[in-house]
Amino acid sequence: MKNTNTLRLVYPQWQGGIVAHWMPDIPADDASRGYFLGAQLLNFLAPESGQKTAEVPVSLDISDRAPKNGVNSYDAIVRQTKAALDILNENAPEKIVTLGGDCAVSVAPFTYLMAKYPGDTAIVWIDAHPDVNLPHDAYKGYHAMALTACLGMGDEGIMRMLPAKIDASKALIVGMRERQKKLRIKGLSPEETRASGAEVVEWLKSTGASKVLIHFDLDVLDPAEIIAGVGVEPGGMRIDEVVRVISDISAQFDVVGLTVAEAMPRLAIKLKNMLDKLPLLKE
View 1 (cartoon, one colour):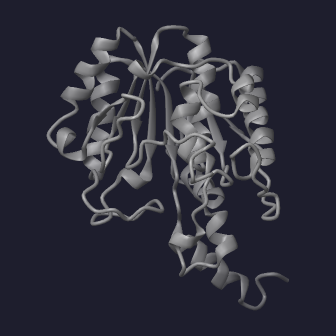
View 2 (spheres, rainbow, N blue to C red; view 1 turned 90 degrees about the vertical axis):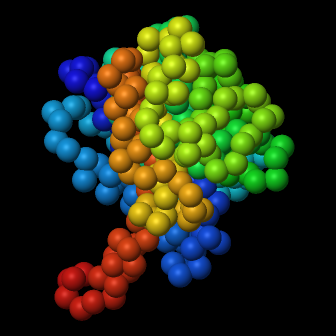
């Protein structure tokens, strides 16, 4: 990611997740909006790079969560998707680093890059979950529909906004705890990438694409090492394994899009709430 025309996109969207019930130790509203703080922390912790940085304006209105067309918080997600695409079209980057936010923050930058490099991109989706839901499914969180949106499937209104789509044969899911079969997207378990990223690289070569879009959901990481996302399912990838896979890809392909998503900073939320209750800090 050394190109000088790389945009760092801070995209603190939280409305795609319906996650508060998984974190009963945190006030529900704070847990729901936790991805907002997570994106800010990722940007704070990320190395200085000289990259231009832009932030997608994201509402914090907890009451703006009405479902529509099978998607929770539909209106907010549509507004924020349009805002993200406007930023990308205005800046016209060649490469994009996205710091989110729920998993759906990959949709706008990835489809923008697909349109910029037509027919020459492939997606590596590193995630404990496949994110291939559709609006008619029981779970209405848009973050679970993120990869299908990149494939051009989902709500018609949102699909019309997106500049491009990719075929399922050019998407690979890495790190899933369970297989998914309904879209015939190839998947690799954590065990299959434990030793190296060679199988990922070989798959990428088979696609014929020279440019790669990498989505890294922090819940793919093994909770025995770190709890960085919402999910705490055992048997995930270790940090060095994910870094090695991404590095192996970068060594042989042009990585034009990299998303780090779903940071859920439980400790930071609790510390913030504690500080809010202390005297003098608000004066």
